[in-house]
Length: 301
Image 1 (cartoon, rainbow, N blue to C red):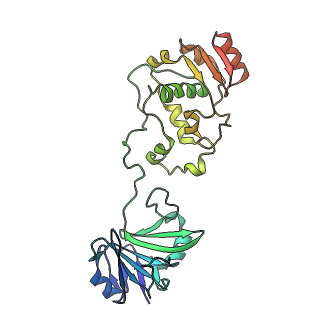
Image 2: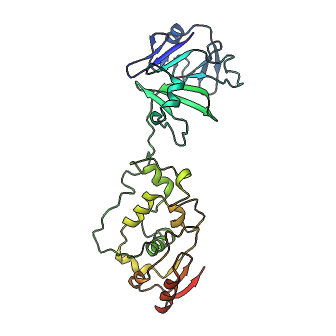
């Protein structure tokens, strides 16, 4: 029976120390020589049918990763038997450890809902479907960087070396950001919630779970975002709609039903001398009347 140990100090298969890539010869000495090979387009697959183990090799001489099959597929290279050995992680059976230590699961790629257990620079990634573990893939650990390819300070709020607009009403500020950032593209960077979630380091922002309500870190970003006073003259119109980019980035799945960004005060409009028209769907009734009193062409959406 195959026995595997992975801890902070070692990775052993049947008491033999293994590092990836491992030579086929060494792996045979650790397992057995009762295997077959399958030449795929980009690699060679070594199949230990009786052990329920697959080995993947780019050059056919060294194996880069192993897969323990608990629910073998029906591919030509799939093992004929399930993995029936024992895999210990920190001296505890690994599937039990995985279920009992959710906080230790490490995300290996974007959208990784299963996660891996990592020790000794080796990752054991779990392929899980409806709580059933179908396979464990073992390879060198390569840390996943959510922010890869994004400029490090892209969404860092920078203080302006010029005069900026002071807002008293957050809902009004959001309408101005919509015009300057998404319509006229004068305010940079153009905020993208999915990119921001990858860039943000303090915690993992799960948009699929959190996107039905305003996401706190995004709200704070727009509250803190400075807007140069020189751009005030660019605003001639405000058009509120539930599908505006600004709202879709605050709460992508809200359906535009939020009241969090209602305009409650009209006083900020005085800072925009060329504002001639507003179309409202997020505003208090008295704000509508005050805009009209200012001589601004005002209508409800």
